[in-house]
Image (cartoon, rainbow, N blue to C red; front, side):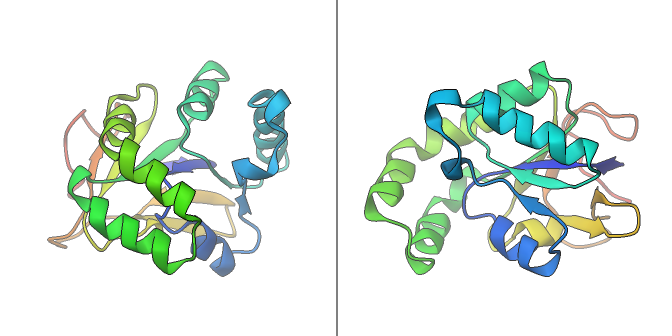
Length: 174
């Protein structure tokens, strides 16, 4: 199953993924005028799709809701609830502002649970030590993201969502 849009939680490795694939867009929501947000952000995402450019987008609830309202198929990637300390360490290591780290620390459980409850998308819950590149691949020829096949990897992520290939709550065992 292929997608053009991946909504990924902070610290999952969006920037690192884009460094490997320069043709993939990293739509950093902080770069958009908040007065016109999310309309300006969604216009950007739609323009990327029309231009056949795969895009990594914010996991903010307002962005996820806008993706659904605009009937844009996407994969939502977020860490497991128990990964909080690992992610706070990732934010410190990459040099995130203390204000940002404190915000994530205070809202971690709520925001992860909101991601888990999001309807209208395919979910990938990352296990400890996993990054976006561990679960998503990009094919420059087809210009699409794909969910990596799990194989026998014990660390495979939890994937759910209603698609032609899977049932809600199932793990992918391809």
